[in-house]
Length: 184
Image 1 (tube, rainbow, N blue to C red):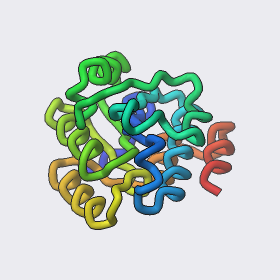
Image 2: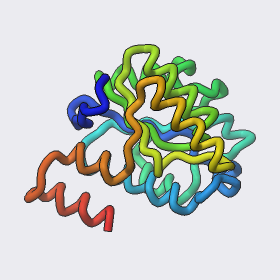
Image 3: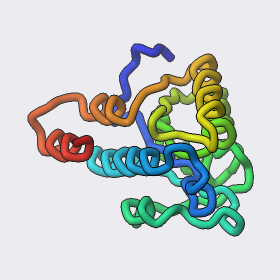
Image 4: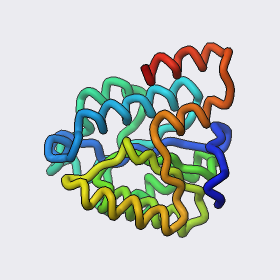
């Protein structure tokens, strides 16, 4: 995969990794993170991308946070105990069933579940884009190291706004107005 390759809405799905009640409060810049993930989810919905949501051991970490669940009402949350979403059969099957070869990833924690998911997805032949402003860890250093490792492994590191406008492709549409309103 080339870093010059743009996201294509016909080939892409959004994967939201473990944005849960007991984890989010200790995540670095958690309000900004949540705002950007909500933008990605809303944008994916506007553009018709499949959305997959994982929850790491919800009995211990709680469910997906309420502000995000509000925009994910129609999306089933898939429980997992593996750190990598790709090592959970139901999540891997759901991603495969989208028939999309590109995964746009957001969520927590950058250096654990996000990193392992991205590395496994790349290893399975998926094209992977990571929205750097929509992933985080408890410390900025862990996030920085994880993003470097994902980039070195072949993931494209992007931003929420860049990803949304790449998926949108052009101005002058109803979708453009809706996406523009999301990023203001």
